[in-house]
Each structure stands twice: as structure tokens, then as C-alpha cells.
Amino acid sequence: MPRFVPSTPAALVRLIGDRALALPGRVRIAVDGPVAADPLALAQRTADWLRRAGRPAAVVDLEDYVLPASERLENGRDPQSYHSRWFDYAALGREVLDPLGPGTTSPCWLPRLRDAATDRSAREPRQEAPPGLVLLVAGPMLLGRWLDFDLTVHLLMDGPVLARRTEPEAQFTVPALTRYQDELEQQPDILVRYNHPDRPAVMER
Image: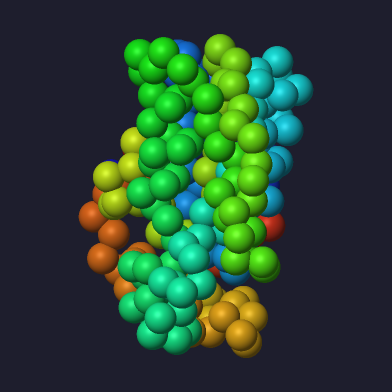
């Protein structure tokens, strides 16, 4: 029966990196987790590890794929908006994941879509994906949305820990994130108990 195995931050990075290296062609990885778990930091450490291993790697921050403020804040800062109308998952699929899929003739992807601080287009130029690129997308609620990933990692935090580690101005996100974890139907390839990021525990599929 699958069970969680104690790990370390370095071993977790190596595990994700090794799983990526075992996949052919360009690889799209979801590092799925709440902001309190800092999935971006894990994605960046993994990208660094892959580059040292000789594999091209890049990271996309889901915070750079937010919807315009007029849409995400239409009903204020409420959990339902954060769950369903905060991030532009459709654009993430269209501009990042689909161009790097198998058989793509023009593998060019967009690193950033929108600057949340200015609520304007980031005006980032598209980048051509080299052969073998590993692209890690880091952010919350990435699974179960019909996004095409080749490897999925989910950072799981218990509700009380999530609430304690979430900044006061972002507490409205906690019910949405808790609901997402409770209702998650897509089984990640790597499930990580992340209440203590310095002492993760891992379950692989």
C-alpha cells in the first residue's frame, strides 16, 4: 500500500529532477501548491538542479498569469473568486503548455502574461523552447483543470498549517485552497506532505 516516505528538501528536488530526466522530449511539470508552501522556490531549485545536470529548464510563476483585476476582483476578495476567477488557466494552457506539447511545430512559449501590480500586459517576448526543455509551472490549484502536464507534483498542507502560514491579507484564499485540496480528484505523480518544508514526506505514483 502506498505510504509517505520521509525525505529532505534536496532529495525532493533530486526526485523531481530524476523523474523529469526519465521523460523524453520537452517536459511540462506542475509544481502545485499554495503560496504558503512557496512552490515557486521548489520549482526554481529543481530548475537549477536540472541545468547542472545538463538539461535546459525554465520556470513559470502562475502569479504572472492572473486575470485582469476587473475580473478577479469583480466580487471582491472572496474564496470563490480565488478558486475560479483569479488565474488565467486557459491562457496558461494556450500560451505555455500547448506550444510545448508533442508534435508542436512552433515551440514558442510566453514566460509572463500580465503584471499584477500594474494590471497591464507584461509585454514579455515569446521564447523558443530548445529540445529537451523542462518547464516547471509553479502555483496554486493547477490540477484537475484539463491542463496538459507530463509530471505533476502537489504540495499538501493541512488546513491549520495553511492558515497559519498564509499572510493576513491573503487569508481569504485559505477556504478556496482547503476546498481544492479536499475535492482534488486528479492523483498527482508526486504527493508531498509539506507541513514542514524542511522535512517533507513523499508518496510517488
